[in-house]
Length: 300
Image 1 (spheres, rainbow, N blue to C red):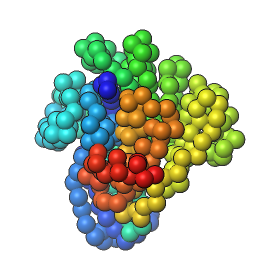
Image 2 (cartoon, helix red, strand yellow):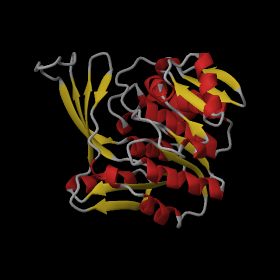
Image 3 (spheres, rainbow, N blue to C red):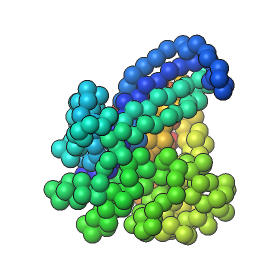
C-alpha cells in the first residue's frame, strides 16, 4: 500500500455534554467535559493510521502548548509529522463542541494556525514524498494549498479525495483536480443548491468528474461511479456521540482506495468505520480498531 497524504487541519476538541442545547441567551448546566484531539484532517489521518495505512500529514499548528500536544498525539498514532510546521504567534486550532443526550453535536471551529497553511508549504512537503497513493483534504485549511496538493497528485498519479467540510463554495480550478468529492447532505446542498435525491446526485456527479459520494448519516452513503448510483447501507448502530463519524468514513474510504478497491467497496468500508465510531464519545477517541473494522466489513 502506498502512502496516504493528508493535507489538512488539526485541532484540540473541547467537548461539553448536556441534556439539551441552550437557546439564545440561555445558560444551562452541562453533564461532562472532555478535552481531546480533533480537526477534520487529523481525525481522518488517525482513522487511516489505525487501519494500518502509512500516513503523512501536511499542516500547521501554533507554537503553543496545544501545538506540542497535537504533534505528540499524531506521532503516537504512527503518523509522519515531518511536514507539520510550528507557526509563531498563532494559536493551535480549537473546536468547542456541544453534544446533547441524543448524541447530536454542534461544533464551532477556531482555525488558528490551520488558516496559515500555504501553497509553498505544500510544495515543499510533497517534494519529499515519492510513494503517494491517495491525497486527502478538507476545507478547514486554505483551498489554494489544497489545489496545489491535488495538482501535484495528478502529476504523480495519486488519487485525490476532497471532503468539502465545513461547507463552502470551491475556488476556481479545485474541482477539476478532484477524483472523489465526499460531501454530507448539508454540504451537498451548499455546493449544488439541492437536496441529495438520487437524481440530483447523479446530475451533480456529471459536473464534478463523475465520482461523487454523499454521506447520509445512519443511512450510509450514495455512491456515483461509472455513471451508476449505488446506495451503500451503513451497519445499524445506536449513536452515543456522532462527533467524527464523517471523518471516520473518509478515513476508511481512503484506505480502501489505497488498497486498490473500487468506490463502492471503499465506501462500504468507510460506512463500517463511521458506524462503529458513534458507539463511544469523542472523535479520535471513538475510532474503532483495524480488527473491529475488518470484522464489521466482513459481516456487512
